[in-house]
Amino acid sequence: MSNISVNSFYKNADPKLGMLRTALSEHNMLITDENNTPRQGTYHLRELYDYVKANLAWLCEDEDVTNNPNDPKWQHAIRCELQRLKDAGLVDRVNGKRGFWKFS
Image (tube, rainbow, N blue to C red; front, side, top):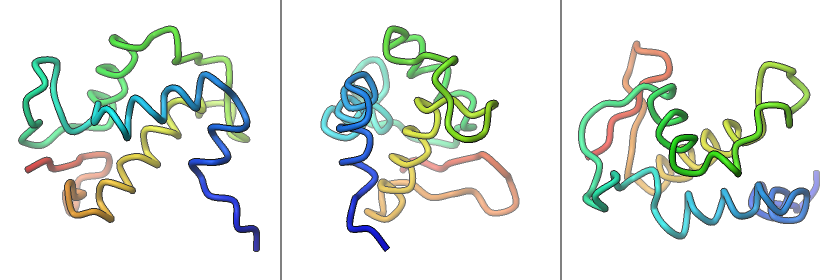
């Protein structure tokens, strides 16, 4: 098993994905809204994708996909960041509702 972290993979593999990861993690893009206030409530993953793409469209290339041709790398980076936030206790999945995340 490799010791390469997800963060280092994205930063080294593609500069745009590295910038997106920085926006998501260091600038708290997912846990704050457009007014820089803490995000609260329940959001579907699609809403979070739309929010990120509306604000950082130049970093969100749908043609750059993972092994699954329907899975753009920028969306994968968002899901990785949500998992990191979940591990930190800042968000949680909504039980029984696929794709929904609770921010508090």
